[in-house]
Image 1 (tube, helix red, strand yellow):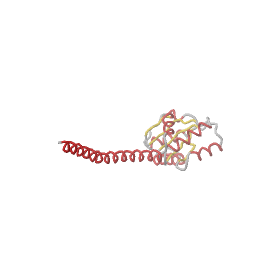
Image 2 (cartoon, rainbow, N blue to C red):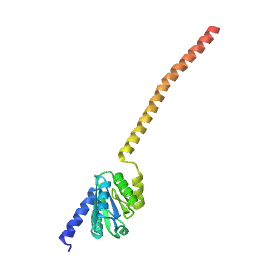
Image 3 (cartoon, rainbow, N blue to C red):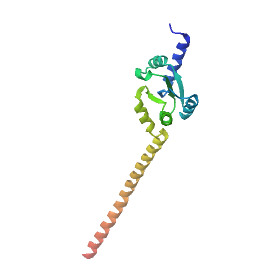
Image 4 (cartoon, rainbow, N blue to C red):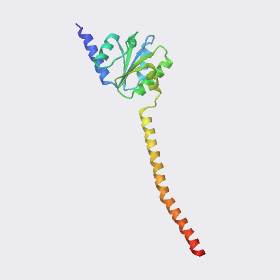
Length: 176
């Protein structure tokens, strides 16, 4: 039978997996306490970085309905549980790993789907949600402006065509 403290740890991790938009598993071997503190800051307000036990984390992920590869649980593991924008946290991890090669991104989960380390790096290359939404709004506005100019051009072309026909008719009528 499981010890109560381990059962409580599994329940807490299960809740974190269920309430998070994303979770990124990392290996932190060789990082100092000060570096881990800086890493937690770089993840932003919407992420929690926790050192976890591999076996308990694997059990918690399974209980949360998440299937992760066993290779992700090799070596010392810490998980960044992201409740906000996963792109912001992925960028924080990527940038920190550039400066501190001891941090290794193993893989993770985004909305219940398992991600490889490469997919997390691609996620970090995306622009933030706000930037993408503003670009989308700009594209919609540009299309509306183009449509408005097309609709404006039709009546003015019609007026010019009618004026040209009147002038031509006046010439032909005046010449006869």
